[in-house]
Image (cartoon, rainbow, N blue to C red; front, side, top):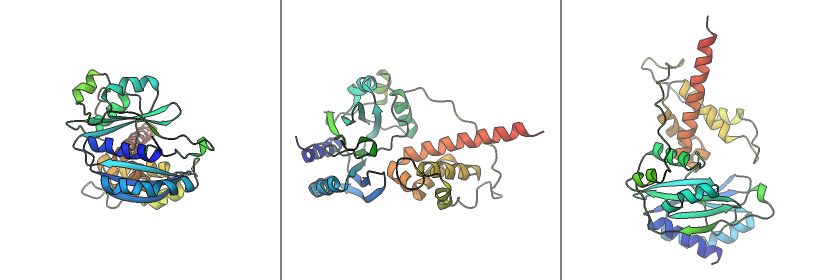
Amino acid sequence: MNGLDEALRMLDVFASVGTERFDLTHINIDGEKRGFRAAQTLPELKASMPRLFPGAEKRQNNIIVRPHGAAAQLIQLDDLDAGSLERARPAAFLILATSPGNHQVWLAVSPPGDADFARRVRKGCAADISASGATRVAGTANYKRKYEPDFPTVGILEATPGRTVTKEQLETLGLVAAPEPARETPTPPFRASRRGRAQVWPNYQRCVDGAPAAKAHKGNDRSMADFVWCMTAINWGFSVEATAEKLTEESGKAREKGRDYAMLTARNAATEVDKNRDRQGRGKT
């Protein structure tokens, strides 16, 4: 099967579990966005693929899609080793080989859970907790500097069209981590309005300008900018949920990686804010 056929097959497998639309992103070898089209239907995206393949190879651009619209909850398990892959295999509707020794599993959970349930599944499977919900298209090269000049091709290792699983089945398979204890409500922020809410959001561009240089690509470290911005917002009195939602508006990386990335960044920022407040409290006489 050639690369284009592999790509079309992957899109059909996503459609088999109810996916209706896909966000399409082009990322170059240095991780910089080079194009974006939102909410492409399956026929639109399949019609585009023959035109996208030659340009992606010429420019060394990654073709990335984010599936949307499935009635089931789609959970991406990224960077799985061989052992974790075998544990997740019975529940997967799609398994991709993304690079030598690395695999990506997709689950369709019905009825759907929430973002916290998806995080618990990733943790239970020893997968990347910050997986974005976007994936390179099968049949295309994985363009990263660390792989040049021999770029691996993303391939479909196994597909079971239409397979959905329940939360109970995932728990029976031992793929769901236990819930974490509820976090205590943070102490009141030092900068808030009389109603207890911050009056303005932090300036995102200042966080980008103040971030250190990125190691994997040109420009500043967007992940650090996102984290610092979230810390500031939470310190000013915004909730974790509101901060994550606003981050997807401010940060291109958050829009690309999705709400799970935004929620993880906001939660980690809230934990750091709490630690800072504890340290400040211990320092008082």
